[in-house]
Image 1 (cartoon, rainbow, N blue to C red):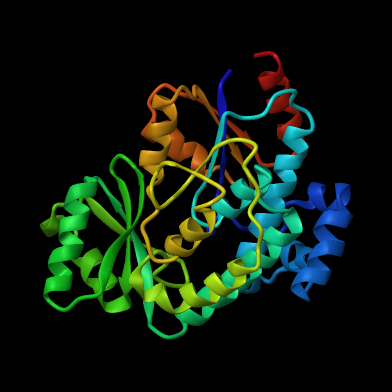
Image 2 (cartoon, rainbow, N blue to C red):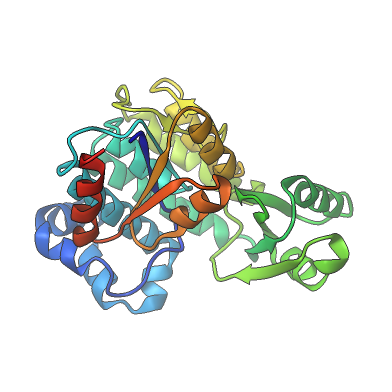
Length: 310
């Protein structure tokens, strides 16, 4: 079985998740985060409150750490590596760490600085995101472009799967989009409960801070291909920094990535991390593909057994 691993981004968090992981690996999930972050990842994840866990500066390190540990639980049980990996937004850092581009601890530090820079950028403009259902990528792009010609600030942020696009921008423009969706050729627009307009030019203030954080990081050759959100193509160790910086303001081309992987010979996708969002995207983007989910140690054991038999 030629499988690819997929790592989720922000939006998969809930209070109480990962209790089995904290019990199994307190060194990686308690000791290292306490030192790198300066706050208790375990306490925020298991005790909340929800508003604290879902805040950008906390949610991103939590999801990176839990997804990486689930990757370790899976990879230690499978006798052969994936043929590819990808991460949705934040998940790209987990994918790179899984491929050995940098260490878990280095990745956690980068994610922490990314999250704080993005939180600060969000605070500068009232903004948000909306899921657009029943619309093509082309129509979504045109709607956003037309609104910008009228002075609006709205862009396509995520191209997730056929008929599933996410737009992001200033709050007034998101409100306009939700209110006028049907007249714009969109079946339905749903306001998302997120902090701001990620993957748009409104995040530009975070780019220079992330570039500074990445400047001192050595990026190693990847053990397996990691597909970039920005290009929907495999990245190299030489362009990984640039891909991560550009990702801050560029749309996430995840549906295109999934289809490209399938065209390259991937016949199974394994979501690794809290929730199962990327599993759903894989099913929509690549009809008939095999999809598995690893969101707990028990599921890591089950999926490893299935992959081991292939």
